[in-house]
Image (cartoon, rainbow, N blue to C red; front, side, top):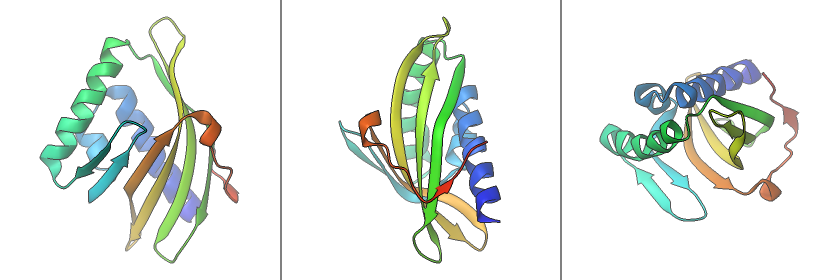
Length: 138
């Protein structure tokens, strides 16, 4: 059951990025949460924070004329009764069919009464990718 719910969460997440859907991506997160990149750490405490941070990301995606968002590799493991660790290697494809961004993202996902949401994401270069105990392909 957890595999199905995780696939659903990240398929919705992927689609929200592809459609540059602020509400869709916001629904994937539990607030407050943190976004960590090699450049900065952002604390999102409310919907306005989400809209501001993902609005900037979506502007970059639109500027690149993003045509696809591909999960190349995905795996997960349950680390407690309510928390999952998920690692996904992403490719972002531009309007010319070329990869313009590729990275690994490691997510902490919280299960509250069967509803899954991201509480933390750490993005890094692909050489930091993890292979966790269970495959998560869709």
